[in-house]
Structures are given as C-alpha cells and as structure tokens.
Length: 153
Image 1 (tube, one colour):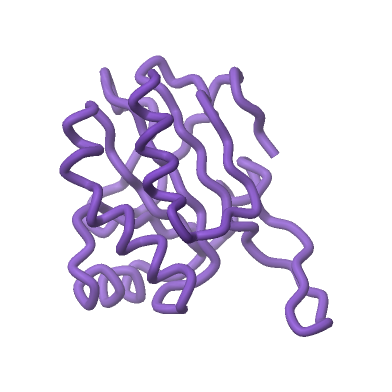
Image 2 (cartoon, rainbow, N blue to C red; image 1 turned 90 degrees about the vertical axis):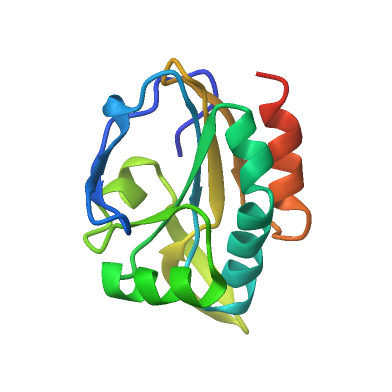
C-alpha cells in the first residue's frame, strides 16, 4: 500500500461524468480518493452518503472527492443517482488502480477468506503528494475525520 509523503501515481479511469479522469490533469486541488468494495452495500452507501453530505465544505477547501471500486460505470451511475451523490465515481473493473495503490488484499467475512478491496482513503495534496492514508476504514465518522485532516493542509 502506498504511504504518506510519497507521490501519488498517475492514473486514468472512466468517470460517472462521462469522461476519463486523469490525476495529473488536476491542478491546484486536493483530492480525497476513497476505495470501497461495492456499490449499494450498507457500509459503502453510508461512506458515500457521508462524503456527499460534506461535499460543499470539502469543495470550499479546494478539494474534490472521488470514489473508486471495481463496479462498472453503469452500476456507479445507478448508485450515484439513487443516493444523489455530489461527486464522481471512477470505475476500475480491471483492478489497475486498485492494485497500483495497494488496496487489493485478503479479507474475511463470517470465517470465509477472499480477495477484495480493503476500504482505504488517500488524501492527496494539491502538489500530487499523499498527505495521509486511512486503511481498513470504519465508515462511522470517517468523512468528518478526513475533512478535519483536510483543513490542516
């Protein structure tokens, strides 16, 4: 997994705004890049809705929020519309970014072990450097915690 104080690797992924998002094209903005396991599941929905509720405060801090999972753009569009999310979601069906950022790993649920996305958030500063990483995120109050850290940049 990538660490704080390292350069965030560039990437290109399809976005729910019908474009290809490329990290290096973002200038003078911080980025909250959060990886979540699956659209429209309980924890992922809470996390996404919490970031959406705080989006106006986040954007006032010259920051954009981007959610990433391996779901398709079609799935993301339904998820975004259903919960009126105020930011874009990126689709990484081939796990390219997910693996590049080191968030694909062993998980377990009800005693069953499997590979999946480890819920992780990267706060990337306006110079493209990773400011902070949250791994194995618990969704309760996570968006507020990220906002508080964002104010320190």
